Image 1: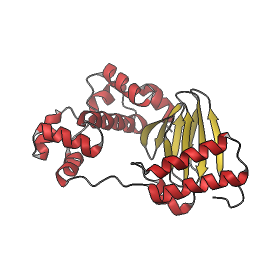
Image 2: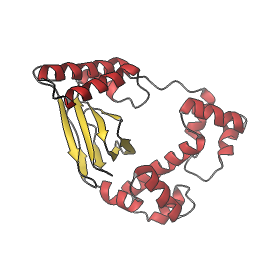
Image 3: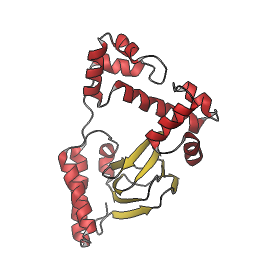
Image 4: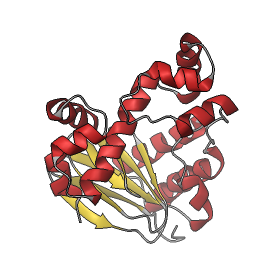
Length: 240
């Protein structure tokens, strides 16, 4: 972070515009003020909407497609918080307050010194506020690792693999992971489909079958709902 000027800048993006694969020299945080966009970073897809805080490591390669017009604030961060900037889990309340301070200062046209103070508060909150996801029970961690989430096996088979009652499995999964087993499965299938779309020339029906979707139509609907682009458009946008 520069000592003589705030490392904060605004970026405005048109709907349906694309940023091809690129890297930044330092870790940085993007605060999504308006709109939304789909991003592929480190080969993994995600959707970032207004209110999101998106963190990137130094030199992390990523590409973006703006599903709607978007406005973002970008804050360069010191290399010292490289580890914190790699976290994508929950964050402490001071981080949200620091984000709000940066946004208010920027929108108010605050002097350079005030903007720099707000950016440093954000930096400090990131450095101490990233929270590692809680450790999972061994039985659940092993099941998540071993179960074929992109397959067509019923969720009950995951509970059987874990050696617990299906009701207990679903309840504990949701409590520990933050989503239902079915939502986790859908995310796993979309991520697997993303890998196949970008790394192979397999047809859409083959990708659908490989990833456990009922048919190509189901695949197209689910993929579009998750990432904001149809599978074909996603492949065109993010293939190298």
